[in-house]
Length: 121
Image (cartoon, rainbow, N blue to C red; front, side, top):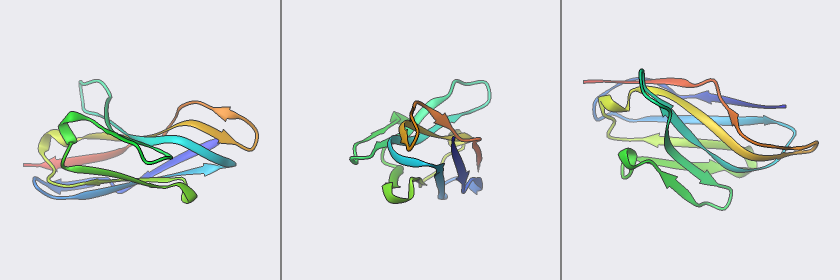
C-alpha cells in the first residue's frame, strides 16, 4: 500500500507564491515519475508538472516559467514552487506517483487526496 500526503495549499493574492509538497509513504523502493495535476470547477484534470527519478521534467503550457517542480528521491517527496500566481491557477491540486516499485510489487498510478489552491484577484 502506498499513500500520498499533500500539503501547502491555501489562499493567496494574485502575484503571490505557494509551495506544495507531496510525500509518498509505504514500502517503496522507487518511484519513476511524480508530479502534479490540477482540476478547476467544471474543467478536466490537467497536467501541471511531472518529474522523473532521473530529473526529466514536463510542464503544462500555462505554468511554464512560473512554476518549478523538484523532488527528493531519498524522501519520496515532490515539491511544486508556484510563483506569480493568477486567479486562473485556482484549482484542486493533486499529487500523482507513477510506476512505483515496492518491496512486494510493482504499482501503477497513485493519487493524493488533493489540496485546494485559491488565488484571489
